[in-house]
Length: 222
Length: 131
Image (cartoon, rainbow over all chains, first blue to last red; front, side):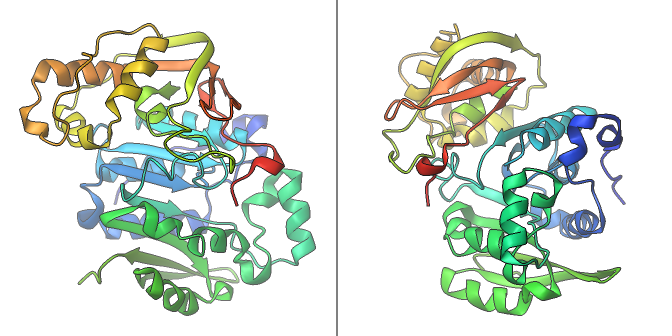
């Protein structure tokens, strides 16, 4: 078992109050990546959307190697980008955080180039006005408030054609979801995008039924 | 830290701009650059070659005061043929030169993106967001 990246600095710096502290949804994603280590270890470009603390990218760094892969990440929250930077340094994985909306400043140049795409979205189902307030506040709520079925932000990535635009030929996309997001429907809806999805890990954490959906351009035999 | 390997992948996210007119972003008012020695992985650089926009990289490196890269690009589609000296230069230029404070401007719309404490802010005003 690979060690979980060190993120103790989050509790020591006020700046990081609005940054999502790694939790069960983070850990199930780490476990899915570790489970698929053989599949993803040769990745050359890794992009994490919404990196938060940077824990997931730092963990990917242990699997793919600190010098063998380019780790890029985006986050709307400047403090999350700063935190991701520190997490990379503390865990000796060079990360390259960017303050950005989803993948907007990278999509043109990363066309069909991302080998490992990671996204732990704000997946919690909330009323739409609760979500708008959260998104505008720039506070911790933006990290989990997901609007209708918890899919508002996720849909911007999925429906926006971003995944099939970014993924390299053998690229793999890991998405964190809960039952309320209707994972089976997500998988169905991604087929016309030329992406095959599979639920590769499930775990119950409190009231949340967490799932990791893995997408690729072809069906992966496991 | 904004490395040139990252900057070579950034284009302006404004809906008023289209690639490649919005690339590369020009460095402006760079007040802090650090050169950080980084472990050399020859294979990583070779595999990254097809992704490079050579002229953009050379221009951006020059904006930061580095003119080590040759004007004529090696054959980026034949990674094995590129001499190791060029690979080593690329390693230095792509990974070791790190911008801490400054900004980058879009060549098309002139929007200025600030780099502070090594983090580039690629957010736009509401009306400029690409939908």
